[in-house]
Length: 611
Image: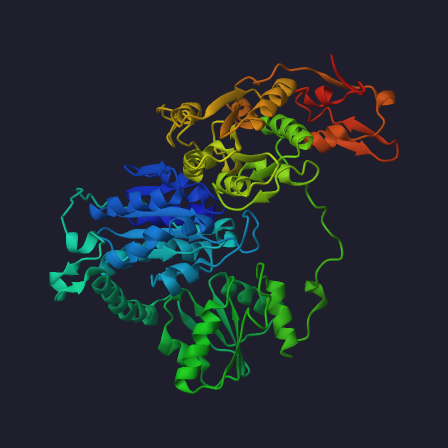
């Protein structure tokens, strides 16, 4: 065993390897992405980036049915996508240990929303959940989860939040455990064929009801474990007001105690279901309890129920009435809560700083191929008064200033169906859906199929840079390689479009005028049209030693010709362009400019030229 200073995601992967995992699947999504990639370091472990999260969990379940320990990894948005399968998996249970990592992102630091998957997975799905307080605890929890999954015959959940996934700490690492299991599949149709049929083994009861009853019976086993778990504990303190720390909420409490030099009565909770008897032991004798949890008042509600059942008069304060109902918890929030309760005087040293950090404009990397596409599409859309729906990916920066092109962004794959819905209202405006290649294979294809079969009049613009750039260059079915960087068949979006009978065009987004002409033609067509904007990710290709997809044109400014119109900035949003307010003109940062020449193509005054 050796101590290493590692990120939480590496600690989680290490825990899975130490538990003997041999099958790992997932779909890239911050904050969980690195867990899958770190599992590549294991020996004789199958690892893949699946086409989406539902497929990832289904693949992992298939391995579990062959008695292998398997792991499926995703973020909260992906867990939503996999929910249909989860709500059957909870009924059937598993064979080999199966753990689902569902990473939440309180504060929406890298997500289009924030949510609490404990509600979906435990409150609704009745599956047991581990909620780690530290990266080290996350590593130990996932090892325990594999053991319990096989003991209980149930999928177990590890739910790390972003600050667990991306924080670093000293972790004790051990060798990978090799279970030497030979895959074996045993038929059990009563268990794994989920159909509304009469089940003889249950005296003729309908199979879904029988499986539901078995899931309900497992809850007692889950609760018995929670009572004994080392991840739940009581710490003595002073006063009639106690703090409950769920997952990382406990770490914030401990940091606050260090700052305040004060010890509070604390109940540390790392599991769902709750250890009811331990909870009662803690609550008795207290007047108030504050529950620190991310993000919804899940545990607060459960504690209120226990108090009601037992006739306790303890007032439970949580994120529905005392703490903020949105955003991340912090140590400062714990201290502020203690101050509001009159427990401490809020120290000046932890008050928020008066200096505000500058806000970073969301944009693409300098040289990104999406920049030329978004500029061309903005000009064409403005001319045709088109409505543009967006999707999740690097190109979604086009919905923010200064470009402000896409008018909607929901979840992965929604751009095409939303565009189809807008078009079917009969609105007298063209409708364009912008989607990326990884997102297209994730869940965009079905939207395109629906648009074609229902004869929607929309233009689909597919941003194809041959990678999942937004989360760190993971391959997808169109990349031509897998997670091991082995060459595999690359699926062709244009052939898919042609097979669907869609008129398909391919553009080079660095050729601005040509792109505008083709986009304008596509927008004016009847039915569904598909425009594929194809160029490799500039950042990835140059890191691998490749040459830029564009002909390098050295950019120069002619300051006296610039009238400060800022069209170049507003239509490109390139970080290498900046406005000099005192001189009312644009300038080029030649240290960061990659000389794609798009800004010169846009400037009609000749203030930016290429030489």
